[in-house]
Image (tube, rainbow, N blue to C red; front, side, top):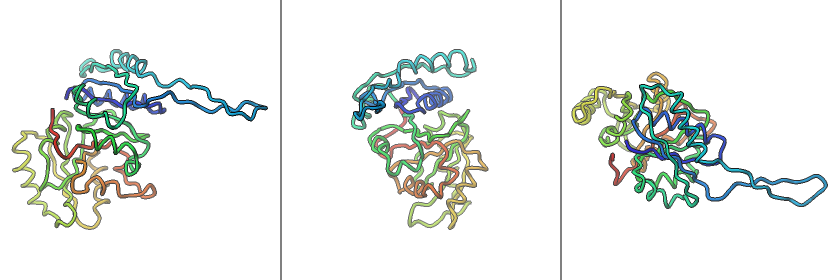
Length: 279
C-alpha cells in the first residue's frame, strides 16, 4: 500500500478514527493522509436569558492540522520501534465532497480510505454509501464503540466461484489470517465442503503462495447464525466484501437494529467491484 486517506469530520469520534487508522497504516506498511470532509464551520444555537432572539455562535471545528501533529507525536513516542513508522500528513480541503473523492484518491496515490460511521447498519441509508460507490479504492468503515489492537484475522465474504484474486492480494498487505467465507450467491445451490476446499486450494491459494488462507463454508438455512459462529470462533477482526456484486453487501446488512449480529460490530472493508486493482 501507499497512502491511506482518513476522512475526518467534526464528530467526537474523529481522534479515535485517526488513531485506529494509524494502527492500520502500521500493520499494512502505509502512510496516512488526514482530510477534512466538511465545508463550513459548525455553529450552535445560544438563547440568552430574558431574550427571545436566537443568536448563533461559531464553534471551533476540529483542526486537521492539529490532529496530524498530535498523531505524529503519538507515533513517535508511543509506538513500538519495530513497527512501521508511517508518514502522517494532512489535506486542508474546504470543498471536499463525494463527487471529488475519486480525484483526491488519484492525485494523492491513495490505496485505501478509512472513515467512521455511527452504526454499520446505517450504511443502508447513509450518505457514506454515495462516497463508497464513487471511490475507486477500498473503503474501511469503522463503527462506533469498535476498537482493535491488530487486524490479524479477516473474513472475506464471497461466493468462491467468483472469488476475486485481487482482493486477497490486497488483504495480504496486513499479513493476517484470511478466512475465505463461501456463501453461495442468490439462487445458486450450496457447495459441498470437499469441492469448496479444492476450489480454494487450486484456483486461489496455488496462485498466491500465501499460507494464511482458510476456508469457511456457510450453507443451509441458518447462514447468519453460522456467520456469527465464525466471527466468534475465528476471532474475526474485520469483514471484507466486494461492493455491488451478487448483493453480498445488501445481504450482510439486511438485519435491523433490533436483530443486529455480532459481525455488525466489526469494521467492514468494502472493495470496489469493477475497474479496480491493487496499486
